[in-house]
Image (cartoon, rainbow, N blue to C red; front, side, top):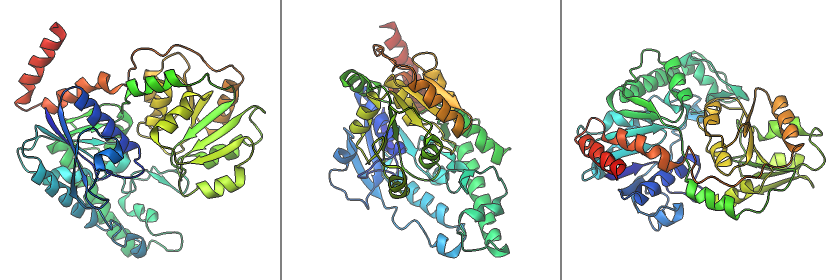
Length: 424
């Protein structure tokens, strides 16, 4: 197939989880013999973009995403015009570049893009977070998970601490949120959509109960297991007591909450390594850095994998509801023990354990610290890495290819090729 991947998260000097997912998928499709290109932003430079993000194919700089703020913070409202504007901009780039491709696969933060994609384009989008119905994409407010579904109450996330969300601000925000959810539901009914966890699908139905999700399906995030297998095989024996936390040091990720809960409660040989950058790093480093707690800042992908591969265990303390944590999947693929909060889509990832008890789930941060201590009381697990992993891109790829071909003239060709492959 000729496949065009699209994301406003690419290119970038520091690619986040969504961007890494797109590059992993695109490279694996290339390796399987498909013709894949990535369409992304043109306001972050247009030279050597593919090399920058580790993509082995051709990158097309196609649209700008600059100045997305629209003074919402200053005005204290979600602007009803902002997200539809960017949806049209991204769709216009898709319409321009789609000719010649069998399928266009959008991975981004504007779920109503599909409303503006021209008829005849085989369009698929993947939803990676709760941005299908939450304008902050996180459903996390005042340092806790938000379960409020009232559109006007979403104004609390944009007014700021020094402003009050009066009647006018609530009314304008309600228009923005209601329109956003309605347009997203229409896009889901019109085009094929992937949720990276069943949790995300349920969350959208909770906010929009009458949504038509008949064209939607759940396919978990995946990893490039051959690459992770090489990292696991190259890693030295894990050091007893080494704990690694990888991710953006920001609200919702739980780094501060974990450090506070763990202070004075872990065994003396415990050594914490935090790999990542973000707005909370400086304060947490000033408060907790010491002989047994070190902050490395942002690490490239190979460096982060190496840290996890040689750790006693990985800790993913996110207090927000992660949709489908790639960090958890990477730890499981590397054979490391992993401790995480049982929130969002994380419990679904227990299906990819390489051995019983590899993923330890806790209901509270105190319980998570207890489980970390219990794991450290045992020697690190040592085992020969298996040849395959359930969440490898190659294992999940057939589901995606079938979706690409579904309801198009590609389907018969896809079925024929699959039959020939299995017969061989």
